[in-house]
Amino acid sequence: MRKTEFTLTVFSEDVTGLMARIVANITRRHMNIESLTVSKSSMPNIHRFTIVIKETEEAIRLLVAQIDKQVDVLKAFYYKNSEIVHQEIALYKIPTSVFYKGNDVEKLVRVHNARILSIESDYIVIEKTGHAKETEALLKELKKIGIYEFVRSGRVAIVKPMERLNNYLKSLEDAAKEEKNN
Image 1 (cartoon, rainbow, N blue to C red):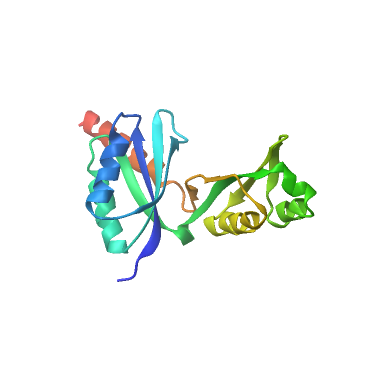
Image 2 (cartoon, rainbow, N blue to C red):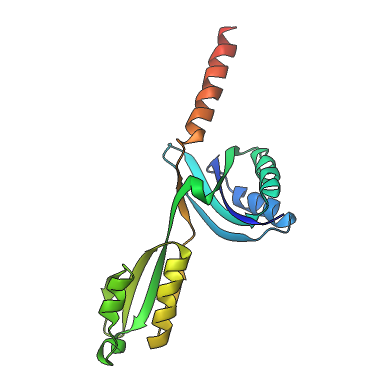
């Protein structure tokens, strides 16, 4: 079977050690994490893990079911790239001197829809948001003229279907109320 890129979203309470348990579930299956981002979610006291993995859909389905069984995980989902809107952010530190060597850095920044964040005496920091291919394309161009540092964040993603977690939590709440009334 062909491996495809999937984005997993895992919702949990803020619990120490949960990330290690999730990563252990993934590495135990000899899967490679392409990207991992953890942040607050739109709901109070609930955190969101966004994990990118290239694997078969069957393997991802089994992984998500296993992660879902973790005590501190509220719910885990997986999505194909067509089901999400996603971005990454990249920062590039380049020598200030490249501006004076006949390089058209300003034009390069505009062509790649990037922006200059900071201009210091020794270096300039450029920011680019987009997909990995876009941030890599700017990196390739900047390497030609000189670059000190490069860093890219993990993927942040919003799912196109309405957020399933809200529906799931609502169903749990309704079931608890129903049980209480019986």
